[in-house]
Structures are given as C-alpha cells and as structure tokens.
Image (cartoon, rainbow, N blue to C red; front, side, top):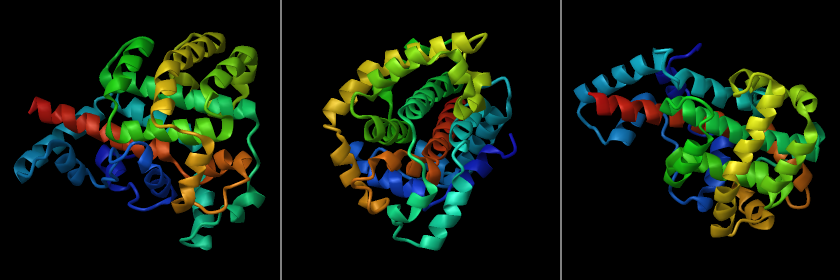
Amino acid sequence: MAKTIYELVDDLPEKSMTTRLLGALDWVVPGQWKNVVGFEKTIKEVTGETDQEWIQKIGERAIQLYNDKTQGYQRAQWLYEKIDSAQGIAGAAALVDKIGENVGFLSFLRWLTPKADTTQTIDVSLKLIVEIIAFCKLNGIPGEGIGDFVESLADYRHEALMRMATLVCMDGIVPLGPDFVSVSMSSLQSLGASKLAENKRFQQIQSMVPGKNTTEQLSYITRGIDAVQGWIGSFISSKSLGVDKIVGSLSGFAEGMDGKLDYVAAFTDMVTDYFEHTGTQTVARSLISRAAGEI
C-alpha cells in the first residue's frame, strides 16, 4: 500500500461531493455516520479515550496491525479503493470546483452517458460482493464467508451501515427500482462468465473474488447477492424507501435530478467515492477497536 493508515484517514476530505451525498441520505440511517477525519480524532471517537499516552499507544498498535500483511486490513482497504477507482472521480472533482458550491446536475449531462441496466446490475452486485469480501478480510474469516456476513448485517452500525444504505439507494433503487436485487439476480444468471470478464469494475477486483475461474466467481457473486436479498428487502420496507423519496432528498447533493433518473447513477459514480471514503473509516474503526482491546 502506498499510504499508511494514518495518512489515509488524515487525508479524507471534510467536505466533498461524497460527504454531501452521505449527508443528504442521513435520514435513511439517522445519526449513524459522522465524517470523522484524522487518525487521532478517529481514535478518540472510537474509544472515547482522552489520555494522550493511551491514544499514542493505540495508534501505534493500529499501525502495526495494518502493516502486518498476514492480516487482512490492507486487502480490505484495497477493495474499497478499487471498486470506486473505475469511476474517474478526479476529472469530475475539477468540474465541481468550476461549477461552484451549488452543483447543478444538469451542468453535467453533456459528460454523462446513462448506464445500461446490465452494467448497473453488475456494478451494484460487485459493490455488494466487495462488502462481503472486505468484511471477511477485516475479521479474519477464511473461505467464502457469505453466511458470516449475512449474520453480521444485524450488527452493522456507523459508516458501514451508511455505506450499505447509500448502495441500496443510489446503486440499487434509483437506477433499478426497489426490486433491484431480483433484477440483478436475473441479469447475473443470464449474463455468462465471458460477459462478466469484460466488465471493467470486475477486472479491478477479480483477483480477490473467491473462485478458480470466472465461472466459479460468477457463481460466488450470484450466491452472495441471493444471500443478502432478505436483509435488503427488510431494510427497504422498514425505511419505506422509493425512488421519489430518495431523489427528493438529494437537493443538498445536487439540483435538477427529477426526470433524469437514467443519469443519476452515472452522475453519482462520476462525482463520489463513497465506498472508498466510508471504507477507509471502517478499516480505521476495525483497527483501532482491536488495538484498544489488545493494549
């Protein structure tokens, strides 16, 4: 890894299009996500510790754990970064700077191409799979880990729950509808390994997906999506989530999305990296919690 864990956390933006999106969706999981930036601040937030000597010790142990390549922390961080890196966020960030604080969605339309449904179903499926694999890496779970992940969803909190909520809303419901999981399942089953292998996002993470070949990896992805279907369905119904409700809440993120739903997923991909941002926070929380427990 090019950066240390404290550099990754210190370098998180306090304000960005990503934080605006997450803030706009706070109503879905109220109060779960705080944009804590900075390694020392994160230690204080996670542990409640105020003694500087203990904060130093916890930080040092967390850094040791992250640097230990026999642990899964670097691999989890890599996954959270890679799943977002296919999106070209750097160029979009420059555009946002030019447009200014009140980002007009319509200003971006000339640069956007609506995603084909097949592409979107693969994208949301791969993000779900990255969440499963990263969870296994963070918790030292060998093998496929699908069952362990599904059990853990009941305990999802903080930035991890915010990430899942954003995935459900922005990568699932808005582009594909509330039944996006079954739509994705149908798409994956008819897709075939050769088509999956052509997908750029899959190519980014393929080395980490369980399976000896693309056919086995497609089977793993399909089983993973099927396993989370119940949790996602309950989440959607308990929050009364629908396209209009979600898009109506996004005025703090970008104006003018009504009537342009085909473009929303492409726009979100272009200007946010919510998986990497909240994923970095999840890795840091996991490290710090373990380090504090070991000292």
